[in-house]
Length: 128
Image (cartoon, rainbow, N blue to C red; front, top):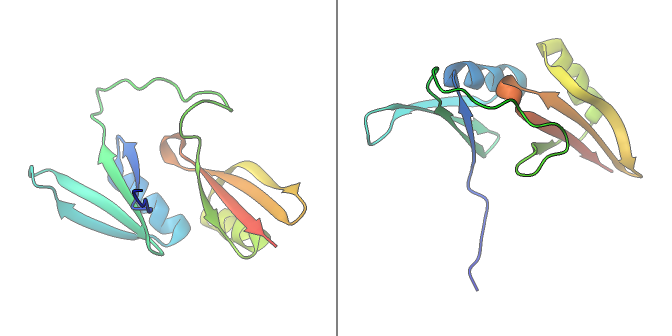
């Protein structure tokens, strides 16, 4: 039986460096710039060991509007935090926009959702 393990998240953006700078500002991501084998620039992030790749989408490409919630396909990715209230306060100080303010989804579990550039949704999750 094959064994599967996490490797990366891959985002697409018309402004990869702007996206990368957002993640650096909000989540203290390390921006890793390199050149791909095809000679194109590449921007990756290291968020406390979490690999996030950001690929450029040409400005002339018209993307469909983001789907309504809920929708099929990838909806969001999540960051686990020890103290949700502290994380939310810190992110708000940094200028984050919240799509969903903190709330309890069940006893011992609280969540909130940050709206990042290009309508990327990031869940913050606290488990007690």
